[in-house]
Image 1 (cartoon, rainbow, N blue to C red):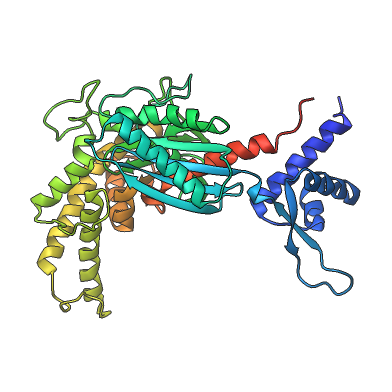
Image 2 (tube, rainbow, N blue to C red):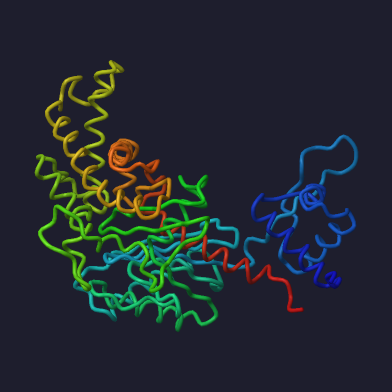
Length: 420
């Protein structure tokens, strides 16, 4: 049964908006070419979308030989404002953007472990309100939140998890109360990081991959055939609870100590580095502390490699300085790769993802040096071909993923065809 004229118009409008979202500003002629629609049909939809306040003229195309330049149309970025939050145990980061994802303002605030639930929530909400004001946004259309812990697949709410601050759950509810016109959604932080890597990072060429989060704690996100998998209880990727050799015990239902977390969490990595005499005392080192230690080890190894190559970039104190430190750093990175390979090999054996991304601040700090060592070990441990890549987004992937999901949700609503 053919679509009614009103339905056909709605479908065409949505197609044009999606193209403008993906390609950026376009002329009417370009819209005609990309949609395959007739010139009169494109002219009608451009007029409708302009009258609806969804698109506007944003410039002109290059000079034409005859006649006026063609008008460039783009989505009205100020039609809606979005917020994204990265909620960690130690603080909150917020960005506010327009409808096309351009960041207008951003800020972070630390929240100490001894801060009470009420004051912690107020600090976080005050930060959101301040960033919204700095962005000159009248109101928020959609708020996307990334947080550690399990998300109930039925309700979409953050579940009560042992070890996580109570203010995390209270914050989501309080934001919904204080921003009644906004649509507030929460997603596991590692899942959001994977979505960001899939859309704008190192996994853009992969429909199937696993992201291994390496930050203060550990986690994993699974993307199969282009879709994020959450599991029956929302717990897919809780790799910190994976029983592994090399720990003093087994994890429990309420504590991941004794699991993979005990090998690859930030505290464990810092402890491992200490065994090789590697420390980073600088208080300005990146958080988590393990990222600073790993980054310093990579730098020391690279410095010696540069010296051996004779390129004159061996370091501040001469071409042979730090060789002993570099040897320790090299052994530390090997030992860390051994640990990470245990978790990665388990994922590979079960899911055969073909690609594993070392995410989070630690994965980014390790870069290609650490990723290559893990990949080498996986080739020795598994017959399943697997590439291992370092994150290009690091800890910022959570905010990027939260903003992408907020933008998608807002555009889905604003661009949706009317009810038939």
